Image 1: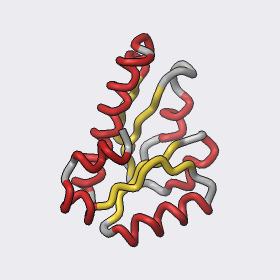
Image 2: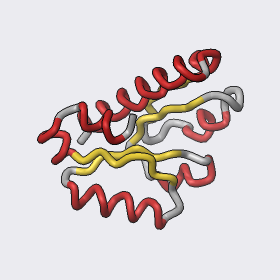
Image 3: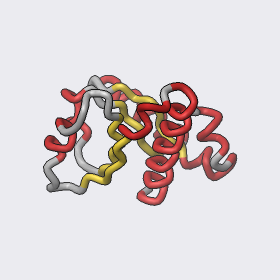
Image 4: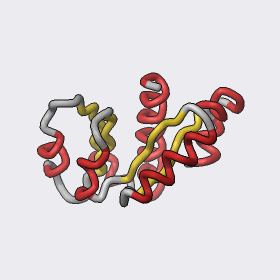
Length: 119
């Protein structure tokens, strides 16, 4: 799953970059990718920077900490069943879930499946 989450982190960053290059090129310089380790001051990162900054963070810390920051969640699950369950649980907790990467499908269909689903 860590390799899977790194792949997803990169796909989200690249997809965001390509979208902005096409639709709002002046905002490309405001993309802020970052890995937040458990114990790092994530609250400072979330408050920093101009309002137009798109913050793309990879983390393995409790997502509940991000509820008040209008965060959009991208996460990974091992199977299709788990992906549906994870998405449902996160939405019930109040998260805006953009995408749950299904490793079972990724293995079967490859990286283009992420692009077809998300991009």
